[in-house]
Image (cartoon, rainbow, N blue to C red; front, side, top):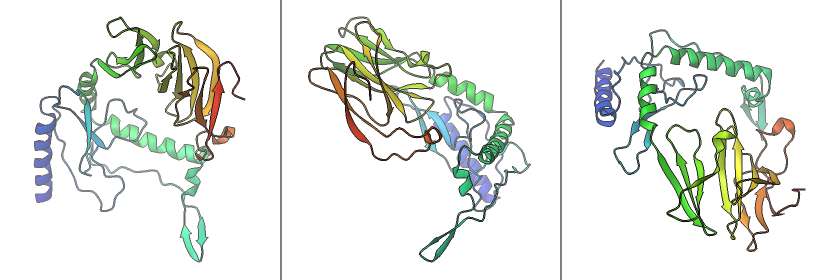
Amino acid sequence: MLGRLVLSAYLRRASKMAMGPYLSVPIRPIRPFAPHSPHSPFYVVHPQIPSGCCPARVLCYRSMNALKRSLICVTMLPLPLFSGDAPLRYPAPRKAAQIDDYHGARIADPYRWLENADSPETAAWVSAENRLTGGYLAAIPERPRIRERLTRLIDYETYSNEFAWGGRYFISHNTGLQNQDVLFTMDSAKSDGRVIIDPNTLRADGTAALNSTSVSRDGKWLAYGIAQAGSDWSDLRVRDLNTGKDREDVIHWTKFTSAAWTPDSTGFYYTRFPEPSAKAVLTAVNLNARVYKHILGQPQS
């Protein structure tokens, strides 16, 4: 009982100190949880997290630094915040009789079947977990207020990633709630910017991300990478900075790379991985990366 009173007092004080000026949500009663329980985090849900995903284990509060104007996430105590007294009934995964023998040491690995992300059994288990999570989140009465308040806090205009190269200026801009920053270019520091790449228009759900940019030395070309739906894979393309149109050049199967232009701006170097099989696109191991040179106008092959 004393522990509960101390923790409740701590959370009330932390709420006032960290979030008082911005978020007013009552602290719900805390009840003990079983020792060594893997399902006992202190949950406060970020508005950008879909209801089907695992709840966030962070508490977001507004930075007091007006210059940075950013949301800072800090890990909180591993305490449960339940929407009711009924215990959560997690789906029980099948325990397989998988045992490996490493030089005489027998190691059980009963859940290895879950490593197969494409199997119907794994998909059914994930769906059951998502239903449990969605039901839990839907029962939290404070969730709409938290969503509304945090949405207002992050809805502000930002400028970032300013740089100059090839006789041009570049800057990223976000009006507030755009999923992706928009890249602008300017002929001088005082001229009006024009949109050169808006990733928000490339995919309906807003998950096409601009993950690399490289301007040629003569300032004519922009080699840029686009990653789809959170994947590490990206496609490199080349855009004419004068017309805003893409060339036919497309480089597939790149990860963790950006283009390095040649001094004469006729091509660039990049790294890529071997093309995976259709079933291993999301699970292929990152091995055997190689450096390639692409000449503008030539096919990747």
